[in-house]
Amino acid sequence: MSAALLAKKIAQYDRVALMLQGGGALGAYQVGVYQALAEANCLPSWVCGVSIGAINGAIIVGNAPEQRLARLQEFWSRITSRTVLPALSGLSTIMLGQPGFFQPHIVSPWFAMQGSRAATSYYDTSELHKTLTRLIDFERLNSGEVRLSVGAVNVGTGDNVFFDTTKERLTAEHIMASGALPPALPMIKIGDDYFWDGGIVSNTPLQYLLDEEDDQSSLVFQVELFNAAGPIPETMQQVETRQKDIAYSSRTRQAARGFERALTLRRQLADAYKRIPAAKLSAEEKKLMHDYADTGVVNLIQMIYQSKPYESNNKDYEFSKLMMDTHVTAGYADTRQTLAHTDWLDKPAPETGVLFHRLHIDEWQ
Image (cartoon, rainbow, N blue to C red):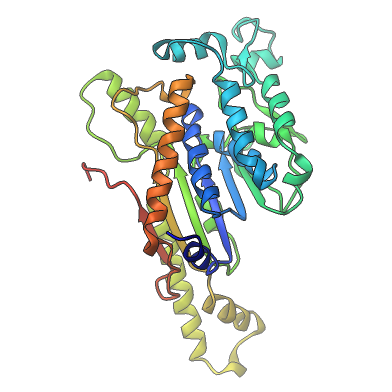
């Protein structure tokens, strides 16, 4: 696709959104996705992430466009810098943690003092705080140049929440809260509350975008790291892998179809109001008629990491440099192929509401 044609298609939308799912070591796939989007000058105006997607998203938003890819690469090179055979990488992560990310507590949580920080997690994430502070310009991140939203769950209430730069000032703690997956990583205190990884409740930020009360048209790149569809397992290892894929996969199509139904009902309500004499409508009904008649459309482009046959249930904590490079390459190739489908970027008609595109069609579906 030529740069001019791509720019013309993107200009049809009020915003370009990049939705980044959680998935630990698989998050390197998102680096390749962003690299391809940046090379095509398809830069997001809103980045929304959960867990590792929140970390990648914060690095993107918290740096100037010309520095983003280098900062992402620096982060992933740092946390995969330990020299270890790929076959032992998962075990190494369990035993030693990851450089610049997390490391085991000196004392096991089973023997730590009740109520202490070490009593509620296996690892300490102080190194991650240092890494985020070094790689992210939080003044830029909170400047409003690009919107950032990161998902977490309130440990006390169980509520799914999104920290959003349009509503509050985000710090390294907000990013860490989104990635604080228990029982491995410690909950993060923000204000009077404690938070864990948003993936516990929902591993995709898509619903947060769809719930927006606005009329903006959106081109959405939904980047997922676990595939909901898959073959029937034949071994116990495949059972464990399949269980994790299902548990952490996004319900993208379900959310999109629900949004599509909501748009249809809103348009039908607006049409019904039009058949009532204006004098008989209240101010609130007139406002609803106006708002519902002009609902923003969504073009949802879904990219899902396709696991390799040799990957197992440790793929989300297999932090070897070899697998990082494999994931980055896959994300880059998938995004390039996606952008080559020029018709996929066309803006949906108002009566359509939602368009849904996906690069990989699974053979078992």
